[in-house]
Image (cartoon, rainbow, N blue to C red):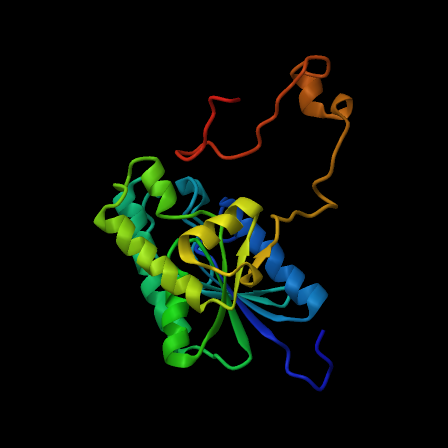
Length: 251
């Protein structure tokens, strides 16, 4: 933690979604922002959008700038289009990317570290440009790997123009990042094999949670198991998403 005579380090977390949006990455970034500020003394800013990830009844209007327990949240406008439609998602991503570009390139650089998540997937390319123009220091946080996922579900053609351009963008944004944060060993291998990232530049940090709020409970004591008469039967619990990229045949 910085002393009283030192300038506090500044961290800018960039993620397209954040609390109160229902996107899990937004909740993780929200927790991280407060952890960095409260327990480690960083000056923290979160650059995100107005809530638009879930159902329309969750699309609340929030102030463009708000301070929550010492953490500054800045929300830019994006059109509230369905994320389930490719064109809608692309327009939202591009709108956010353009505004992010202006803020990243013309924003404060000295004593600042930007952390770009993969929401949107190519957001850190802005960091690569800002590094070239303004010597920005940035890191990447890999959640979803594109274009791999798009090719896997058939949205993009393997070896096609979109895939090749996307890999080119990825190579540039990972090459400029000071550190590449991943969730697991498989993601680390993906970066090393696809983008020639050195292992020493990769930091593996599994997803986190508040241990005071989320903790193991004996099955016999859970209300859900009692209500649905699942205390005795063998039960398989799947707590992940139900999206295009998830394989349910094994379950």
